[in-house]
Image 1 (cartoon, rainbow, N blue to C red):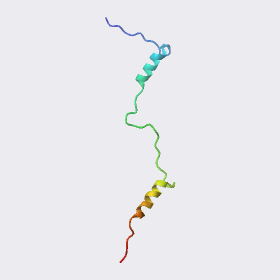
Image 2: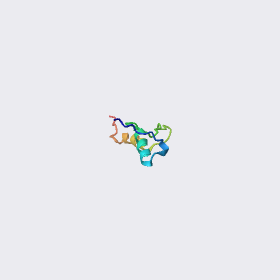
Image 3: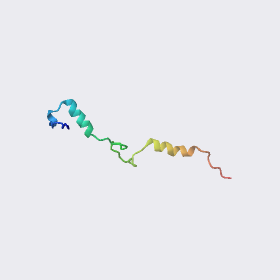
Image 4: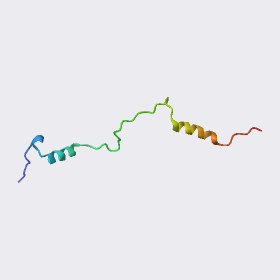
Length: 65
């Protein structure tokens, strides 16, 4: 004998069953990070870039003979 589950509307299910169904329907993002990403504004002053630029001049100065 094959038993078929009775159809019960979502609203009439217990909270536990509703939660279980909702979790099954949900998908994962996988490798994608859902945070919105913005491109860097190049016109804004950035301290990190300024430090990198000044680090280039710490090497020994070139001497003319």
